[in-house]
Length: 88
Image (cartoon, rainbow, N blue to C red; front, side, top):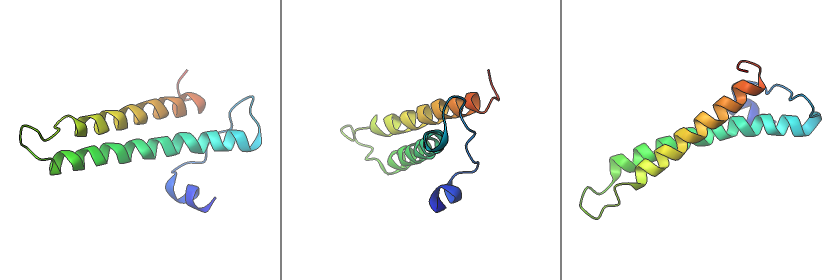
């Protein structure tokens, strides 16, 4: 996997009870969820910086992007640390 090795900082640990491709795809999926959360947070910051500052500018939308991005980072980060045996 050329793209996954370039984007993802670590090779996923095998999950006990799962074999082969399912374990690998699940591990890479968690890392991709972290990257998606980082993108969503960055996009929310971008929308906040470029938002129309009038009364009808839709000022809460950037915070929805940032909140969803941070939630995705926290969720996938905690799952990665649990699966790798760091926590729990």
